[in-house]
Amino acid sequence: MSGDKASLTLDGSCADQLMPMHLLIGNTGHIQSVGPTLARLRPKSELVGRRFLEVFEMRRPRRGMQDYSDLCSVAGQKMHLQFRDTPQTALKGMMTRLPDGGGLLINLSFGISLVQAVRQYGLSNSDFAATDLAIELLYLFEAKTAVMNEMHGLNARLQTARQAAEAQATTDALTGLNNRRAMDDLLSGLVENRASFGLMHLDLDYFKAVNDTFGHAAGDFVLQEASNILRQEVRENDTVARVGGDEFVLIFDRLVDEAKLMSIASRIVCRLEEPVRFQDQTCQISGSIGITTSQLYCLPDADRMQSDADHALYESKRRGRACATMAVPAV
Amino acid sequence: MYGLINRSIQCFICDTYGPDSWKTITGLAGLGFENFEAMMSYDDELTGAVLSGATSHLSKPTESILEDLGTYLASHPNLEGVRRLLRFGGDSFLEFLHSLDDMPGAARLAAPDLILPQLETRDHLGGVFTLYCRFPVPGSGHVMVGILRAMADDYGTLALLEHLGGNSGVETVKIQLLETQFAAGRSFQLSSAGPAA
Image (tube, rainbow over the protein chains, first blue to last red):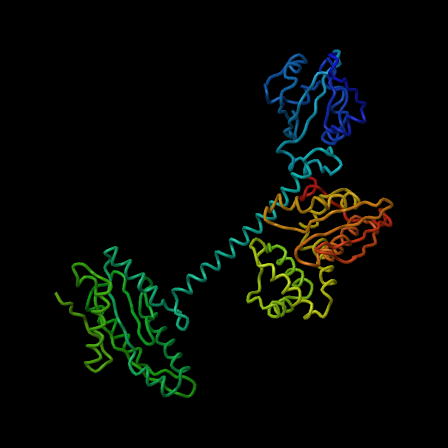
């Protein structure tokens, strides 16, 4: 030994404390002794006295090792190995040659198989060397899992809140119908996609009288009843929106047949005229409607269509209310 | 302040005194909302407002509410995860005491912006320890008394705990170990799922 290197002699119990997962290999390649934690992975009797390469399968730096001299050739290199029988438990380690042909000292540790190994072998705090970061790693693993769970929960809550806010932003609180904003979005989408559709603008007649005579509660009730009727009179893909106090817009998906739209409109007017009971009062309203369709325009425009439907609606009012009028767009 | 601390107070009040009490306390504190999110940040002042709300609604001194909070954190079944993280500190109450200095750093490994009280333990030998707690919001020493009491039980150790008051942001707790093997204590497996069958 060169003079500037101190030689080191460790007795077994010191080695057990410092390296609880070590093995001593004799120069025939047989295991002579094992540290206490390794003995928790396999009974000592299954390890001591057996050939190291019979118990463990070397994965890196090289596979297919045959004998003691193969083993010696990787001394000083990082090793990855596993048990030949199950559970195989991936281990990593380092081997060093003992002086004077005294065999090999191998120190092992669980790399990333730690969490699984701790579970499989029921290991505890005292099974790890004080310098081993295993406990910190396990701590981090649990803390990270807790943080991730909390994050998933938070994401789910935010997602629900976002959906609720979105629905709220496009829904009329009193009737549950779409609001003007939702209708505007839908209409501009339809126009942009050159979709074919019919559009009705409906204004309730005599609604102000109900409000003034029977009060706002009665007015609100009548609005809800009217909304239910509108919902019932359209198909699933059609849209009903409340766009003002007593104004509604109905959009009919792929329906441009003027006769059909007129007949739907008269049916709506009929149903709106059915008297509504609110507490002891009987409320009676009707509706005036203006209709246009995307087919009436070379290049449909959302604002223009709304304004044409509006004009047609006022034509219905002028004609004595409770009726529907087809728009005649100026060329 | 990290939401986790406020959220802990919320869970403690809800699990101990019921959701209605919590609702009243958020009203007294003028929060304007009822749920703290553990992973979000809040103004430091909110913690103080909630604590004074709790003090007046529960008609209990803030100190004992904080101590109960500490016990709750370390022992309530809903928070088994917290107890487990604390038990990683060591195999015995003594080792646990020695691990306290590392606790804020360990917590920061998992949640880098989580600020916990700075802790420092002095071992005076003969089973007597002093714990110094440094934290911007007063009362951390009382929470620690509660945590230590619950953890002593957990390890089966008999210990006397005394809050010695605070001085310029540092609160002092005296710990006296009377018997380390007083009771069996609760079991602890490193693996959260226990050993495989």
